[in-house]
Image (cartoon, rainbow, N blue to C red; front, side, top):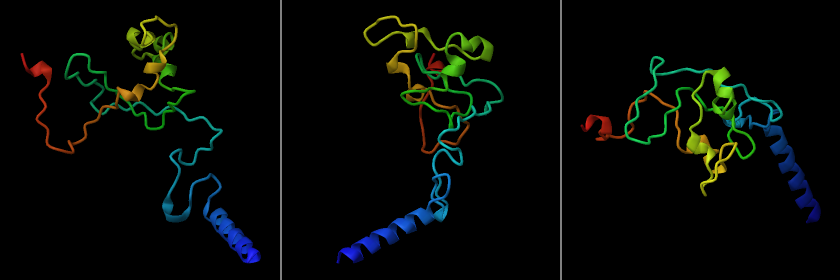
Length: 150
C-alpha cells in the first residue's frame, strides 16, 4: 500500500513539473503568469505613455474627483514595498519627468500630521486614480457631469 502511494505521488510530481515551463507559467492551455515572461528578479520598465484622448487630459466630472491617469499602468508595480508612480510623480522627481506632482493632501497622515513622504493611506494610487479610456460604456448610463448642471 505504501509503495503504491509513493509511486502515485512521484507520478503526480513528475506530471506537474513537466507541465510547468521554465519561467513559471503553465505551458498547457496557454495560461501564463501576470508578469508575462519577465523573471521575478528582473525589473519592469515603465509603460510607454500613450494618451488615448489626443494628448489632452479628460475633464473632471465633479469637484474632488481624483484625476484620471493619462497613460498605461497595467505593468506598474504598486505593492507594500514599491510604487512605480512615485518615480515620476513624487517631489522632486516630477520636475525632471515633467509630470504632475502628487497633491499635498497625500503627504498628510490620517491623523493630520504633515509627512515628508506619501502617507501610507495614499500609497496605493489606483484605489482612487484609474487610467482614462475612450472605451464604450458597458451598461447604459444617465450620469450628468456637475459641470453641465449650471
